[in-house]
Image 1: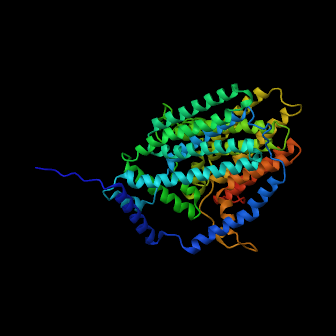
Image 2: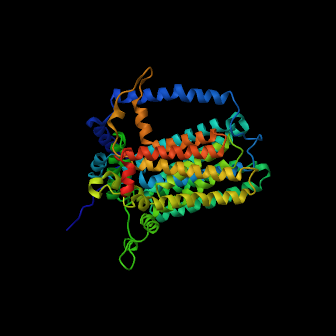
Image 3: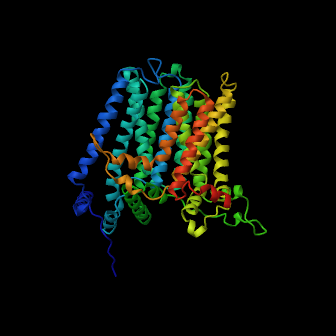
Length: 518
């Protein structure tokens, strides 16, 4: 008896068949129409005319916020470049674990999987095209940020090295994006460790060079070599890839995309929320009674170890950044440190546990749980409040130890401003987590001389927490008194709590009576 093996088609034939399938799929009605392309082009034109052009003009006619002092790169520039490369590489790996370059439309993936083509034929084409797009976008974003924030491109002596550094970082970011999706967790940890060790070595070597003269070229060469070394193994992982897992990721991404386009971005993010597991019995003592509120929150946080680890990193880092910005002289770069730290604390406050979601469910389903609060705020809010406060002040204490003694008269105001930032962040997080479906009134047209701007209201509703944090920090920075800034933060947090309660149906009227009954 003889057996026959399927013969793999030649590369040229496989490429033609993949293109034919893609074109057929594009004609199914999924191809964008002229009207569909016109509205994004209109928004891009508005952004360019009213934001990008004035910002570029202001930058070209004024000194840069951060100046490259010498004709060459300063000695500490290589260290900052290495830190940026590590952050971009690790971020690309993390994004690839959730939404990698091989995520395609489920129907198209199903059609390609049903053929005799090898996954390397159709996934390789998609990966190469998307990596080119990702590298180009990263390069443009880094160059734009460097042009707007520094005088890196003002002189030829620093422009060429700066372009080489951004090109190397963009290359390693694109490859890390693919690596994070196609390689197992162990290989991702190995790449992350290799990138961190390489960054430390480059920073140490460049620090020994006179004036850091050649450190920037080394910082540009190492990411490029790393991308060249990691790229081929990543593409070699395409033939044995788990197509069933890729199909599940594509289906989840398609559903998340639909949620995001219809206005329910928090539902799209919920699809990527890890499911709690383990430690169920730890919620109960040996005598059968529940543990305390703080212990319950800590156990629930440990049931999602990835989110808890991210919060454990973001909260001290955000506290350190905020303290560094607040303890400065005020204005200028210090405000950016303060704002970035507050955003980091805001992100970490949502990852300390699932108690925010439990509070929202109990508030919105009063007929099921009853209207008696019965310790509900304490049970749900003790752990996030304590964890966010402790993590933030831990990072702030480390910064204060390194900068001690603080400038004259800044110790008390630093504590007040950091505490006000924590209160503001908790209020913004409460407002964000009490969000339900998209309100219908946000879809009503807002007619202006520049057209219908109702989309801006939807964007503001989607990112209301971050907008509150950034606006609140800007207002606190504008108040000359630390006590007044802290009081302003408390007022903003109270307004956020009131708005969050209205979202869940708990109006101001009768709220005090409900609290007394609880």
